[in-house]
Image (tube, rainbow, N blue to C red; front, side, top):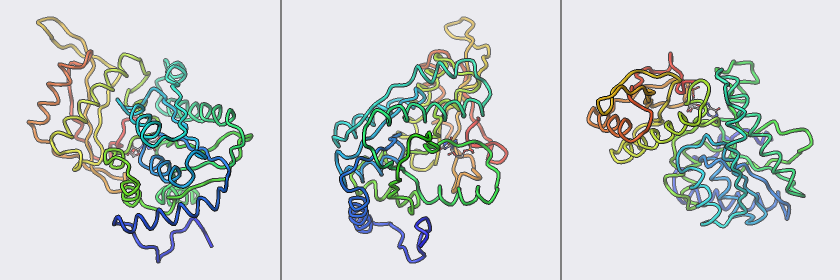
Length: 333
Ligand code: XMP
């Protein structure tokens, strides 16, 4: 039997009861697979890895070691939320690595998007591998693989070309050999969310919008600098806050800020003020292959513009990207 193929008879998990049944089944399966061995998990704080972490904590408790690598390209408050929920509330074995300097030093002066992605992906694996080597006797690696990931790799194996090099944990060095634990690999995203809520994870974490592996690194366009990255993080937090307050967070699939590596002339306190533009992107999509741009009420846009230009040092303009995909990709790099 191909364990990577979702059986046609498998019911879609749409209710709490179905989610609970799935959880019971997986807890049993994981215990059988793992026995008393240790399991390692790269916990990014995204929906998939968070749900897998919660499921494994339920199944095997402290046999699970979660490693959260903060690459310095997370959104505001995200790493803190991971520490709060998993380290404190769920009392997991959580190893928190602040690798900000390691990443930003390597990225300094690198402007080419694919090189940036490659550096971030490679360094992520190295930091994670360093931690894995420090832990002894780990047999298993848990991953938040979901069914669309499997469908995507089948497509790639058939020779279809990817537009960008996406990064997820994979391709660990030769000396690190683990057996995989992938309890949600046959689920679609909406099902993973239902399971996450049934496991008691916060709504905001389970319904979090997608966030690329290279994080804010692909939204701080060109060569990343710490001051522009800081401005981006603050502006993005304001955008998210206003979307929450105005009921847009549930209606828009992905919304974020991008800051290009350019300045324009503006005016503040009656003086010349050269600053970066913050670009807003807010899109809806079914499968991320195509995307449409949302109509955001002008009143909300004006509020966002006022807050970003007043509250964020270094930004003097706000633009709204009206380009669907194609021709624009969702991210700018
Ligand atoms: P694009 O920019 O290709 O993005 O239209 C499509 C979707 O993929 C997300 N994205 C990534 N997700 N690792 C990920 O896990 C990545 O490296 C990555 N790059 C882009 C993007 O945010 C959008 O949702």
